[in-house]
Length: 586
Ligand code: ADP
Ligand code: ASP
Ligand code: MG
Image: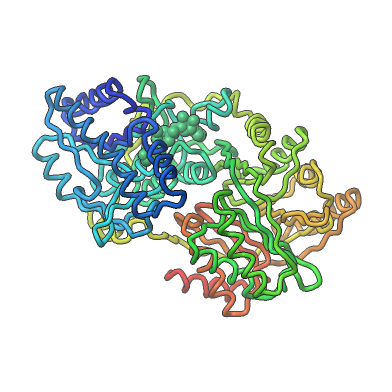
């Protein structure tokens, strides 16, 4: 007998007919002898309807009351779903988040799960019932209803699958799996038979709305096998699995975050502690920053740029402007009309020329790249929002994603995942959604090359990385700062052993572009790996604080959902490693 969690999204329960159809899937599983827990979202666009309604009454409704309101959507659908199952002759019981015992913190509208009690669910399953759980909601320690953020039913489903040690978590939705990019945006997108947790985590947090990013955090932390499939068609779907069980590709998918805003603190005195001040104050205002780029700086002053969701721009500007004054910065600039396109693939780190390929494709479409950050498995570029659709298509085609056969069907029979032992799970359930830093590592074998005074126009990043690619240089980190006064700054790292060649090539490129090359023969790169690195608002703060205290300046930063890389002077490498390992309790 298996235990299965099935989650049905809004479109899958949009009307009575669809609820009955979904219920029959659960019943079929039950009749086959499995224990079934169903997690349901609000019907159709009910959550949007409720959000609109609230806005008609109060432009700034309190977060607590929003949660009280929004949680009703799921309460309607679980009751109807249970009735549907009963009408098919099987016992069922609907439970709210509170009735299950999904405990969260008190961050209304984006609460994090702290623990889940399994007693009530298990009791009902053992009595032979199908349990219908309300997605997206929980209860804080004072008994207030909370919600987990839009799209949060996925997280309820995977978290329940984790605590119940379910054999599989099936996500039924209106697409038949995970595609190379949003098929609504680009019809030539292809379905993937499988995708690695880290890839899905990056794609989801970089804008692919198909899965709630935190659901993948749970899946990865607890080894939950997730199967994304269509509610309406009986076709194979996509399995989300550990990287070892998937086919590594340099690029598996392209994600778009359409509503991004950039803020730059211009001319910040370049001394330890500036970044810390900025990011700790943003974190305490509950604003999660995304791309962070600090240029290498000249004349003792540097620019610090970062992006936030466009919705958070006003609040973030308020905080940044006051910090800028405290720091004696020259000014603050911003742009609310940007979008971010990212390419993701676990095989990227093993291939040369991926970046050059992407930048050339964008350049051919005349798209100007405003900022760049990379991690081992993704490259993100910030562009004007009007270029978003063209950029997604160009990136998708650059890696032949429209043509590739993506490895057939996911039949759900991939090798069983090594499950955590029950004791291990119980131990880790305390603080289920806490930031999980797995490791901090030091790489002292890299050299840093920086171009300053690069012209700010389409095709420059392509010029640089096509040439670098032709020289077969193995580029690791790439960071391009926000251009100022028509000039951009671009840095990348290469293995120290390739430094001579890198300088040679860079010198040639710089001459042709009228730029200047600065190089640092040895730098220390520190990588913090784990889960939820970017989505935890305080992460940047926790990173910068201890280094600042030790008087260590951070030269470059790049962030991703599973990794944060920083470059510091080579002489500070060992000390920084020690400090960070201690800061994260390793
Ligand atoms: P549900 O209501 O079932 O939770 P969502 O609307 O949240 O469904 O997610 C499904 C939608 O996600 C799809 O209709 C699709 O447009 C969008 N989507 C975005 N990126 C991708 C992707 N890479 N693969 C598949 N779907 C995607
Ligand atoms: N109903 C909630 C929303 O629309 C949660 C979900 O569907 O996952 O965001
Ligand atoms: Mg969803």
